[in-house]
Image (tube, rainbow, N blue to C red):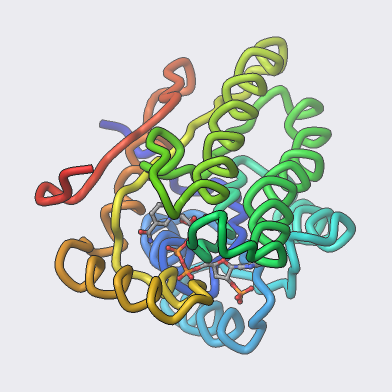
Length: 248
Ligand code: NDP
C-alpha cells in the first residue's frame, strides 16, 4: 500500500501520555509532522525534542482542551508552522468511573468538558482550515464504552456515545469538503487512564482489570495508521477493537 502518511500535518490532543504519545511516535517515524497538545508541557517538550533529534518534525503546544481558544491556538500553530492541517486526532480524555449514586458531579462535569466539549473544540478549530483546503481527516477517540453501558461507567459511556454521534453527524455534513472522519473505539489499552479514577475501590478494580487484560498502546496507533493510510477516496468510519481476552 502506498504511504499516505509521510508529509501529513497531524494535530494530536492528549499527546503527553498513553495513546496520543505512542501515536505521535509512530506517525513521526513514518514521516508525518506532528503538533502535540496537552497540559503537561514538560512531557510534550521532551517528546518533541526526541522526535526532532530522530529527524522528525514535531511541535509542542500547551493545551487545555476545555478552553476553546487554546485548542484553536494549537491548530493555528500547526498551520502557521507547517502550512496546513491534514489530520486532527481528538484524543484527550479521562475516565473517572463510579456508580451514579456516588454523585461525583465534579467527575461528571470534567468528563463532559474534556471528552465531549474538548472534541467539539478540536472540530471547531480544524474545520475552517479543512473546508478551505477541501481535504482533511478528523479522527475522534471513542471507546468500547461508546457501545456498551454498564453499572459504573454511565457518564463515561455517555460521553463516548456522544463522540460517536457527533462524529457520524460530522461525517455526513462534511461531504462537500472532501473530509474523512474516523472513530477509533478501543477496549482496554495499557495507559495512564486508570489513574483518572477518583474512587479508591473503583480504581483498584479497574487497575486489576487493566493489569490482567490491557494490550499495548501501539494497537491504537496502528488503527490510526490504517485509517490514515487508505487512498484519499476511502473513508474508514470506525475501528472498534479489544484485547482478544476481553469479553465485554
Ligand atoms: P492517558 O491518561 O494516558 O492519556 C490521556 C491524555 O489526555 C493525556 O495526554 C492528558 O494530558 C490528556 N488530557 C486530559 N485532560 C486534558 C485536558 N483538559 N486538556 C488537554 N489534554 C488533556 O489515557 P489514554 O491514552 O488511554 O487516553 C486517550 C483517550 O483514549 C481518551 O479519550 C480515553 O477515553 C480513550 N480510551 C482509552 C482506553 C484505554 O483503555 N486506555 C480505552 C478506550 C478509550 P495532560 O494531563 O498532560 O493534559
